[in-house]
Length: 254
Image (cartoon, rainbow, N blue to C red; front, top):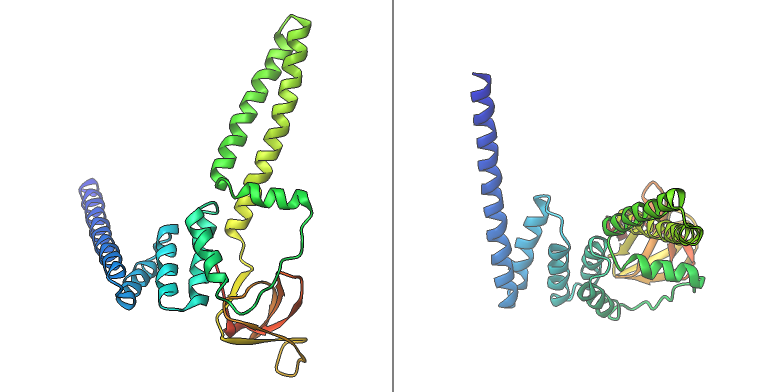
């Protein structure tokens, strides 16, 4: 009897899941059709309904970003391009549209020049996802172990020497790919990235309206949240400047 009940529950759950997927597919297709017909508000409502159901994908966020951009909500477009980029950091379409959207922003904040090694790591980790870098790291580790075993059991001196050198070289690439996997994973899961949504936001010297105005930033500006205190957040801009802004004027990317 218990098995029959369990089977009924499983079948019913599968039926509900299939029905939910059909609704999602219908919304997706309708949203794409409305976007193609320049019915951006209707398309956006469908995309956001899909998102509210718990769906998370680079394609969904990318389409939402495109729709907001068409509606001239640049800050929201940047927000969703950033969301998409977290999932697919090497997607050239997302990178291009994000750059185009940023060019519409008032603020032109240049990042602090990074040490060339750090800059190389930043660019390299975006080539593949953290999962792919992890697979490469594991594969190289297995290969390094194979050559090390050859070194241990081979008889020829030259063959053993070559196997040992190869195992060391490959192991260095194991460390490198593991570091890139870690960096990629860290970027994909970081929770400090935020976008300014307010048209104008004052950066103050202290939390609260009593703080001295340091500068003004505008919608679409990308920043890092260092800490939160009540309704305020201490932030850092890409050029290294810091201050406090109201939490209700920014939104986190995650």
